[in-house]
Image (tube, rainbow, N blue to C red):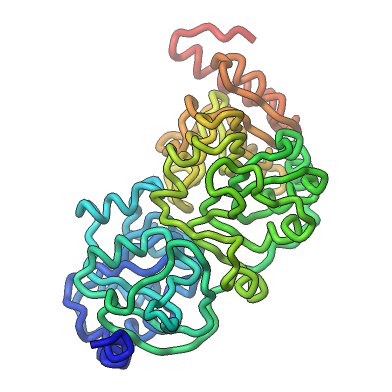
Length: 439
């Protein structure tokens, strides 16, 4: 049987495809903007068919209809990285948070630590060679395809054809459900935040011509960009590629010409953005999606000379411990690839690992640099891994610095109204441990 006959035979209604899911199984959807909206809506409509199903996922940017109160206990959300629409569900105990580096998630699936029973994907219509395309997310799709008992894919002609290791033989998917709809978008973040702009200016001073950047979306990554317009031949190797980099590509600043691996290519493991961005990446040979085991592997990142990893934080303590996924003991997001890239940049020839954050939150009422973390706060990135910390007040280079030196440097880039308290809290912490504070 040829691929056309196979595809036609496997095209079924959503109800028919979903009827093959067994009670108690774990569904693993495609990540981020590739999450199949129509299939999930149909799954929720049919929730009475099962007593309980698990949903194992990374960052959700979609509607998350399965994470509504009336969906419990049918759906248990197992999340590597809670988002705005499923955070409450996970924190309430209706779901579970799994702390894990992004690069390691496929390994956990492959080796059975995280079960994969049903692949829940979104793909393009088949091309003339008999392949569907993964679209906006490559990260762990291949592992899902290999491990799942059955794979169900929504076929959506609005999904872009993003190049790289993103083609799937028609025969590898068990059921196709054809349904066109707009895919999930990520709204552009407006400029004009003076704190973010100052942080961006401070970070830009650490970036040299020919550097290769890892950066995501957000106020701070966006604020860096105007200060990079005089740079030459910047490269991109990142986990997510978005709209914010397009102006620097159009100006010829980002060329990837000096990358010593994947030369001439923007490498990412997933993309998210606006409709115009999805048009840009469609069949664009400049963009290459690769599995997360490649993009986020420390040994891959370490091969790239002058790798600059820029990551954010919720809180940093006076020793340089970074909290990026929780507020106190309450989970807010996930680890993602922060340590993947920090450690890769640390090993890169000429690399720089940067943690960037505003000095305060809640209208300057809470300092994000603190003397001591609150009890129960999980540390995302250890003090051993942190090099540069950047706020709107400056840059602290912690590499090779003692604990006391770190406290002094971090206090200097904290908001002035909190500096005395930070030193006092750290002094009391050291005193309680029977240690002498030198500053």
